[in-house]
Length: 116
Length: 114
Image (cartoon, rainbow over all chains, first blue to last red; front, side, top):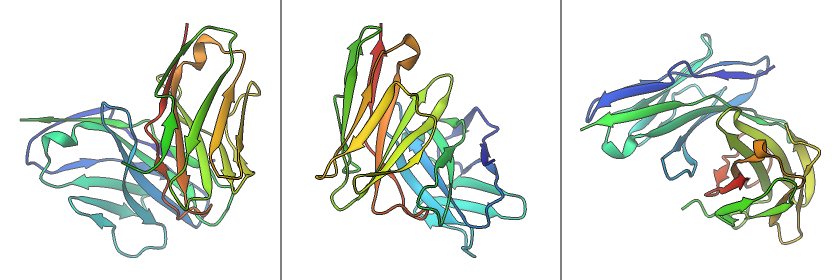
């Protein structure tokens, strides 16, 4: 069965520092996609970044990058130069790629707090 | 703003009642997904529709049902409500059904069952 594990329930980081949020996954599928979402205190879920299992390069989107290590089954989110507005819950998620009926599985989330 | 709209934003009701949550996907998106986020269960996938047809089912209770209409909006019906159904219900949409499609989430409907 597919599983996403986020081992850091909460993190505190100083503003302007880089931060890495851990995500490990377990799947028997060969083709899968990994996603990160941000959930601020207002509640909405905001898509941040996507990495496909066959992508050779790590995905980047502005200050977000995904450190994808396929052999270790990890997909850590790296936020560079953190800002106060980055304070939120962050969810790692996974989905099988080529099934039209595939579900998306979410981790339990990491609450990131940025200190001024 | 993701382009996905959900109504109502908040809903307070009593046990045993029935409610309907509404979702309008982003323009051009054919797939709609429903999720439940509660403190004890985290974010759980409920059900997916593609162009009016059910495509995937997750941990959806028999008391819950959903449908997607010809104009592609979707409704999630929750009946015989229990205290444990109190949660944030999200709708998300994507262009198709492929796993590569990014799902864009609506703002959610916060349901409180008293």
